[in-house]
Image 1 (cartoon, rainbow, N blue to C red):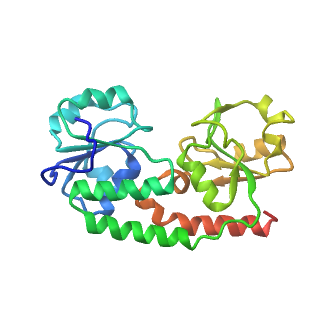
Image 2 (image 1 turned 60 degrees about the vertical axis):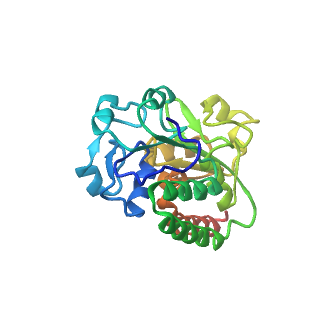
Length: 263
């Protein structure tokens, strides 16, 4: 069943994670024995990727493999996993579905998973460390109109209701697509239009899910010669588990770099 509250009458001994960011979180909560299955995209920690049972991709789960493992708890995400596949499992297993669109949501998600897995204290300490890091983050002085690209063919950007957008805000980057939902498509015609993205001062090209490279940066620079265009680590902007421990330091370097070039 889909759990409505972060509570089980027993401590789960067999956990499956369907979300890479949450898999890393479970490792940080010292659930090394309890986690028995992960997706093929759960690359952290590397030892888990090598040794844990793979149950398909985030969007293409191997349902028979999951059923064979007979988990006590499955952890999914409303955005990263296909609803139909999660619903296919809900009659047989306890499922906790996360929904993270902001840093505050991430804090609550970490707390909830700590409660579910019997790692309340560890989760509380983790949230405190992450919160301290972000509390000490100083955004750029003047909001910078910014577009964050996540995909190519078609080009897609992060809208205002995403976790990425909240991370941008923490840095002082004003999401140019704040009034758009989820991940709207953007064409080159839009980029060249006077009312389009050419009013942006900053273009961020993410390393994931599409791996933008230097050649893409060069293409964008030709199109938008007045804009600052940077390749950025997508994990820092979109992973909402224990990876958040590293995000403030990364953002500080990014903010410092922009300040040096007049950002």
